[in-house]
Image (cartoon, rainbow, N blue to C red; front, side, top):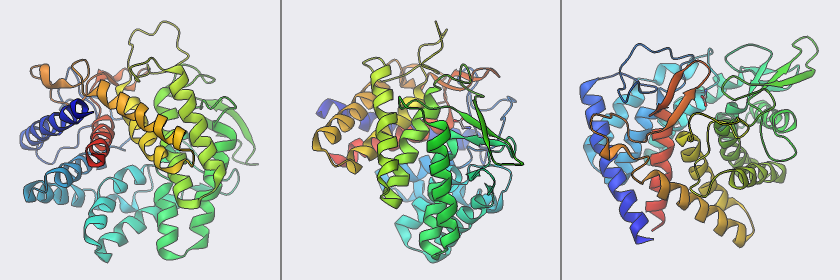
Length: 365
Ligand code: GLY
């Protein structure tokens, strides 16, 4: 265990070096994925959902070091995304504000900061489709994404803070719909659900970043594992806990011993063996789940598995500290294989959830 803690400490030190270089080399730039290990390029974004992850990493570094300079930078990069609290073009306001303004609020208790988080949650709720009972993805009215499970928490939060029962209904119904149409009986998940917008009838499962419509995209399942755990933490609705557990068990049963899946469990003979960002998300989500499940044996196994993933990701295959010129922290992530975006690269959400998982291991010591 002390060896793992040493690796986690070294990872935070390395992250500090990489992030300092990133914000000094490219001030006020919000990277998404690297190209050949470099953050700045003209590659397509597909959608703008990652701008909170830089500020989020800076908050994690501040929490770890208590160094006022990191806090100043974290506040700066959080302020740069404040205007997104009214952004109705994306379904990602949880990603944007939970990693930044919510962390800031938790440290300060300042009501003005909380208002920003609440407003982001209220904005996200405007995506709710009464016909179909889901928050629509950025792609189209007919589309529900599994990724939104990571964002719906900010609506539960806004509902709690304001006492607005409609916000609670929207968040709850979205989770129930996602559970019904995107989570399969074996705990695997589909990336996308397509609805008839006129009737609200669910039509079929689909995918953008996975192998096939009926396959299991690893990051989508990691989002579900983490997101249904969060939904349970807010609601205490045991159906959400059972769903998170089913996803966790699928992940563990289908992933090699080292804990890092490939991009899609169903892809035959994939060219690349790893999707490290899915592993980082799963590690952090499993850590949460270990605190939520009632069974001590299950709690122990989820925590041990999360530690195993962190042990792997802080090792030489994944940590970029021995790759000269590489600007990211965690290698072997994957953004969008079909579009050839961020394939076998560092990705901003991978960095954030990796540091979040590493911080959880360190803070538990
Ligand atoms: N758009 C969220 C993801 O790529 O996981």
